[in-house]
Image 1 (cartoon, rainbow, N blue to C red):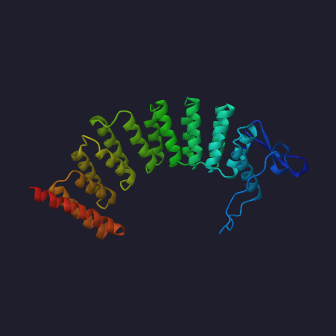
Image 2: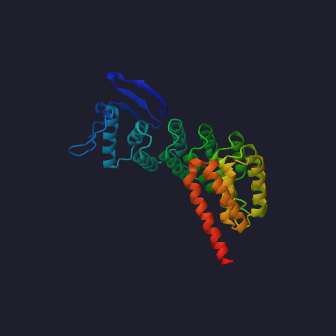
Length: 329
């Protein structure tokens, strides 16, 4: 996918025109351009226990790559070879690292490199090495270009790709592009209200822009409970509320009233009960802890028996906190 053209050459060899000016001809062992290179075989030791059955092409590419690494050769042919190294193994960290070194030494067009990365990403998007490489290249270019569009396209394919989200967050912070990001996040949540990555991104955006003052907290609580009306057992917004609960000035009474309304409609909403137990532990009063203890019992014996041990753990914390309050009074 990331090769511009592939054509057959005479003598049974194969020529591949890369994203660089150099054309690779396979097998490399018979290519005139590589006759000065002595391949370096992989050293598995004298008696490898379970040797991997690599393809002959993979073995040749990596043997020549090791030779180039040993020479520290930063050339067009070395750059072209890294492309083939990445083709046979897109997660090869050393291949990406050496490619960056070649790009910098040769003063290559880094914007063209972004196009190469995008092509590889279509086949290997959940690839830390690829997205780290992209970050370094964008940082070197010094402008955001089409990075938000690139990440948005990648998230269309996989809305929960951690590596894409991490790169998008870096771009937002690096180039201060937060304007419009909340609307983007809301568009993703309209498609999938259970997209935990989008909820996480919402928290990230608010934290890095307005912060969680009283007005913003009220807005976020309202937004979250509106989503819970559609899917009350959706863990993502309950976790979002837990994040809000950790902020100064959290309106615990208002949130408890809204949660109680959820329970009135759905008394068996386990996620709501779990959240209220956490609220009682965070803002302990004797009545709230007594209610939380009853919730733990109901969850472990009736509503969520599969998590019995967890509810016993929560119940122990609730009863310990309750005893602590009674002792202090």
